[in-house]
Image (tube, rainbow, N blue to C red; front, side, top):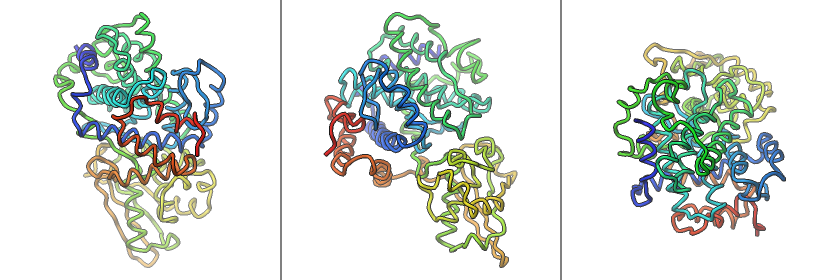
Length: 458
């Protein structure tokens, strides 16, 4: 059965089995997530949740950007929420399915537990990649169905992925791994209707905490159903509508390939929903190449899949958070400012009269040939001007997607931009070097002390 196969995969996975490409992708994901988390500390959601846990719990692991420690479940919760606060963290697109955010849900749990037990960089990489692979395999089965039903898969899949990762770190046997999966499946949740609010990043934090709680309880002898992924009333059927026999038939290759390598993990060049990135790139290209003056535009067509408005749900955003889920806003700021960065997603920018005026001229067009799917996240932006000229730019695959990836240099530049206001130049460079050579760190606290401000910065 599927749950049994997953538990066996977790129990038997070792660092020596990880291919170099998986380790490299894992390091990239850790670098990207830690940068996005530190930048997310300045968001209101991060400040509120940090204040909520301050002074609570045993001092087992650090809260990123805050200079205090709390229990491992609370640290995972806060750091997971911060990791997703800007919607700038990585995403994964299962084949013929819909994306979710794996690292913001899994890594904060891994780092909290590793910090408590003084585990190594190898331990962190092994646990993170194991959790990633478990969530990815389940995503191949039922992510699209869950997403279509309104679940936020970052939370549902992330809870189980985080539990698998922590189970690997705590060296649980197969039976207890199955129990940890069973507990985490009952803890998971999160609704897409909350996109564009502070509750969306809370889903990632909840997933990270769920993974810690479920695995610690399983380790202590707590009970749950040991075949939670299978059959009637199981995770895959209830949340995704997949019957048990379908799950088994679709998963004969558990553990035989690494999904972090292929189809691969995606890293965001822009701090907005991934579904907006193709349009941002197209609009920026039009701005650069055609020198379009926004005042000359009479209409903009965004020609894309008819499924896109189901995700980019805020055609008339009122806040910076809603702007992250508005194709109209993202295209407008690209054409007006010629850049799309952290500073653009503010309430003030959304209310800017020039932005509001241009958004009114932007509309969706859904050519039949572009279908209703959400796989490669592409489309075409057409700008029509007052003088009768029209300019268009088509982007088939968004930048950052594994089919159009960010390089190490581009990812490093993004990281530096995320942490430049929080870390000294010395700590920025030291942290970069530590992550690049993560397998050589004997105690993850050497890295985490920099991000949690546990030691004085030079």
